[in-house]
Amino acid sequence: MYNSMTRICSARLCCFICLVLNCTPSSLAGKMKIVEEPNTFGINNPLAVPGNRLQPKVSPSPVSGPAHLHKLSGKCFSYIESTYKYEFCPFHNITQHEQTFRWNAYSGILGIWQEWEIVNNTFKAMWMREGDSCGNKNRQTKVLLSCGVSSKLAQVSEPSTCMYSLSFETPLVCHPHSLLVYPALSEKLQNDWDEAEQARYEELITEQGYSNLLKDIFEEAGYLKTQKVTEKKDISSPTKDFESLEKCNEEFHKQSKEIERLRALLTQHNIPHEKQPAEQPQIPVDVAPAAPEDSHLRGDMGLLPDLQ
Image (cartoon, rainbow, N blue to C red):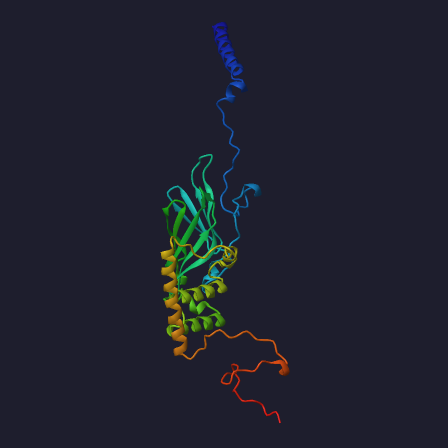
């Protein structure tokens, strides 16, 4: 019996050795897939290799807006929806990370802090733009602020492709005046706003002119991204194209009526609006032409000096 058991074990050992010899690396090469792309989480992930971290396209804008919201700078808030984790860092960025074990799970930037959205003297939302590329545009996120018992992300949605909407709750905005723009401005910019409001009340400027003045104030305060550099590039291009001569004439008559209306308002408030004559070079008295009998220069009382 001992000899029969020995023969059985030897046969099994030979079969095992044959299997090992047949399983060469060349036979496994076609079935194995080596994944070389690591998964990364967060822009400032300390565990990720520097070359593999999320790379923002632009730097965030400076912290701005109501002073009591500045304490949110440097903090981050997470929210998990389905298989995605969102991380919102006020005045810095917002990122999205796919919570799966897929080899190419998505981790990317949905936006970098850019500017406020201001509506009716109120900070309505924060705009995070210039995120990762999405086709021919960049991802961007609009962050809506609302009152809550604690600071947290409450909801995330994607109204349109690569355009995200995020709801952020915080007790810092529960006071009815906490998001007003005017109190957050410097004294100088408050005075500029007061002057613009007065000119609007007296109808010295149009609604469009008033809106442009407010936009300049908000840009100077750092609440909006300035567009002045972009506008300078377009100076050489025509301001407006017309489809036909009739449209051009129609716009000309419209602008002429507006000019006459503004002139009437200036006259009503005794504000000079005629173009001042260019300063003429002084001419020696002996060669100066004689002035008409009833005319005199602006500011001259019409009296001749006593030459005696």
